[in-house]
Image (cartoon, rainbow, N blue to C red; front, side, top):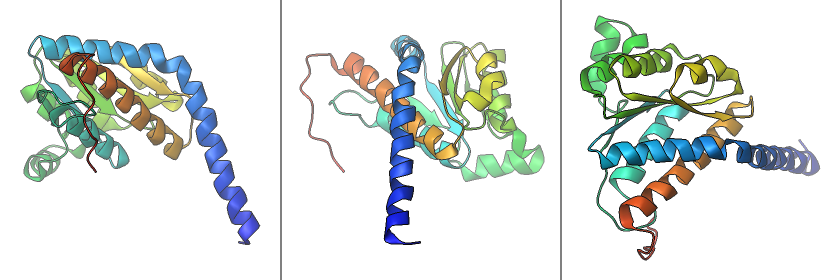
Length: 203
C-alpha cells in the first residue's frame, strides 16, 4: 500500500472507533446498572467471577485486576476471580467433560446467590459463555453479559447486559474495555470514598 492508502486505512479505523464510542452513550444506563449491582453484592460479601475466550479472556482478567488491585484510588482489595487462569482446572474439565463446560462447571462449584458472574463474548454465541451464565442463574447468582448486537439472545438470557452497538470484533472489544473502565471508576469511588485523593497511576 502507498503511504496515503495506509493513512486512509488508519483514519477509517479511528473514525469507526469514534462512531461506536459515541453510540455507547445509549448503553450508559446498562453500564451503571452493572456497576450498581456489583457494588451492592460486594458490599454484602459477594464475589465477582468472570470469564471469556481469547481477547475476552483478557478483558475478564483485566476487570479482576482492577478490583483486586485498584483502578485509580487507594482502597481495600475487592474479591474477584477470573475463571480462565487455572490451566489444570480448565484442561481437566475440557478433557473429562467438554470445553463447552469449562466455565459452567466452575460457576456451579463456586458461585453463591450473593455473587455476580460476568461473561464476555463478542459474538454472544460462545457455548462456554452461554452455559456459564446459565449456571450462574441456576445457582441464584446475578448473571451479566458483555456482548454485541450480534449477541441479543445472550443478553436476553442474562440478568443484566452491556450490548455494544457494533459488529466488528475489534470495536466490540474496545467498547468492552471502555465499559469495564467506567464500571471500575464507579466501584473505585464507592470503595475508596468519593473524597479520597486520586493516587498516581502506575504502569
